[in-house]
Amino acid sequence: MPVFARVQGAALVGVEAVVVGVEVDLGPGIQSFQIVGLPDGAVREARVRVKSAMENSGHNWPQCRVSLNLAPADLRKDGTAFDLPIALALMAATGDLGGDGHARAGSFMAAGELSLDGEVRPVRGVLSMALAARDAGHAGILVAAEDATEASLVPGLRVVPCAHLSDAVAFLRGGGSEVPRRAGAGHEREDPGYPFDMADVSGQEHAKRALEVSAAGGHNVLLVGPPGSGKTMLSKRVVTILPEMSFEESLEATRVHSVAGLNRGRGLVRERPFRAPHHTISDVGLVGGGAGIPRPGEISLAHNGVLFLDELPEFRRHVLEVMRQPLEDGEVTLTRSQVTVHYPAKVMLVASMNPCPCGHLGDPKRSCVDSPHQVQQYRSRISGPLMDRIDVHVEVPAVRYEELRRAGRAESSADIRARVDTARAIQRKRFEGSGIHCNAQMSPRQLRACCPLDAAGHRLLEQAVDRLGMSARAWDRILKVARTIADLVGRERIEVGDVAEAVGYRSMDRAGAGSGAPQLASPI
Image 1 (tube, helix red, strand yellow):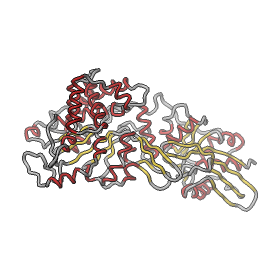
Image 2: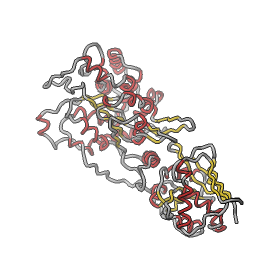
Image 3: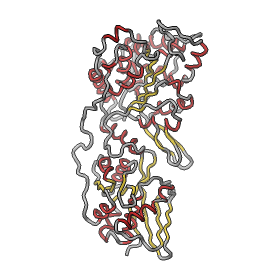
Image 4: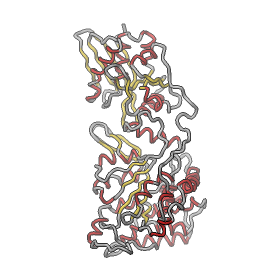
């Protein structure tokens, strides 16, 4: 009888999975079970689940000393995904799988939680584990039946669905089945069928144009206006004008949602994520963290989609400040005493706010009751560095009655999305092979190469920077927005009109210029 066996499992570190060898050694002595290799509480408790699952499935628990090691031993292991590989390694060591089964068990990865009756339950991060199995050259992966669709997204990997522990045993003994694979698995084009549309919003043509520009280039946008002007309605409809995700973008989003445990049984994430956390959220909830190995936060769950922060000044200031680095780098880096993890965070930030605490600053029909000091305090909740990272600031005034009467005649999301798709196609060709999907993600070197200005454009931008005291980052972002405006009309060169429109989308910079009460001034 073999006394040693190894089955491959995997541990999650951020969105990546690290292959872990589940090693079992059976030795003489008093019956005992010891597990080493930095297991957390859930992994240590696997003994109870695995013992009951094996016995209730007709297999004997070894009546000897059992030593179980999770290698590499210096990597912390958490979660319940090690249940299935532990059970298979024990049965391989005791000879329950037979000679051929023992050999096959060492060439497959396994991931799944076991119930006490032997049912295999889904776990987090199966897509990342499947990618790790393929990259490590394993023959395939055994997963819960609910996780099989997600694992089958990885090309070139054999996926074995297991509803019960007995299914995994039967497969390793030479029977069982695998998931049938279709060409282009999981990325068939589908109409997302959103229940809302830009045509639902009456008026606000200037704001819609700003959102079109933002969607075309992936730019962060801030909507400023009085209560009831349509800021939230517009923001929730941004996803309806964004282009369809590529397979690579969908795969990235699926990995994050899988690691967070939000994708069980769903397969590929096809629709761009839209996350709208409440303003009471903590910094850990927004950027990620927690005890043990950190989990992704809302900004990572919105990767390749939209992060909507309604009533931006109501968020606690220190919570907003932790977004500065992710918005700049497109990635969240979380460091703990024993591990450093990276989560992707390429998001389009859409935020909204009132112009003042009462909400009526600049309203021609209602007087603002706030003092200049109160207005300044309200706006100072959003720091200058964070505001610098928002490319487009747009005013959303109250809607007039005449515009409400014309409801139903507005341009649809499909019409706007067609123009956005055209602009994004230009950008995909421009950045082909660079890993960049849109203008907002341009590096300084790409900015210099892709955004040349003529003399008139330089003069206008110099005037704007000098008058408003803009930072170098704001200057860069104006150029990126101008590049997008030119892309929307298919123009190779940026013209002075494109720069003027981009500068016009910096209303909060203009509001902060000068002394006295901030006012939403007209464009330069």
